[in-house]
Amino acid sequence: MKKIIPIVIAVLIIVVGISAYLNRGYVKDKQTMVENASISLKEKGEEVSIVDLAWIEDLQPIEFEANLKSSGKDPVEHIYKGVPLSKVLMSKNLSIEDKEQVIVRSIDGYTVALGIEEVMQEDNVYIAYERDGEALGKKEEGGSGPYQIIIRKDPFSQRWTKFVVEVELQ
Image (cartoon, rainbow, N blue to C red; front, side, top):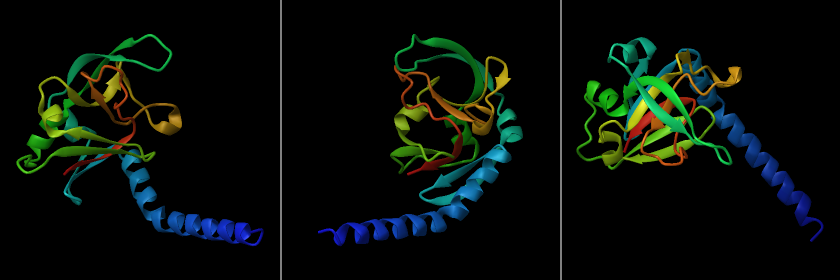
């Protein structure tokens, strides 16, 4: 039994090392996306487009109110600026016909799945880039951006997604 523990630990260290090595390119690519304030749009695993802030601003962003609810704290109302996620998808001619969900991924690995109906619902899911007149800021700066998914009809803000780098239709 005593000999098995060091072997198991060694195997785990090797597995973690291999995983880190294999993912180094992915992390570097995503960090570049944050630095360039861009989002990868994918359809069933294949990248179909990359959008940036200038492109998003061309979609005529709007200001909207949303309540940020953090655990143990009272809700705080903020004014966000952004565009509906549905508008982004439609502007890139991405078909939702045979899709069931939209997967949103962040630089820190956080992933959330949204139903197509929820995303297409009017005045609900937004890609925001400003809060209260200020850029969301990068993670390294203590911010929540450059982009954040805001789900206005999420009663507890639990599926809001900071540091967005990828949106995939599945």
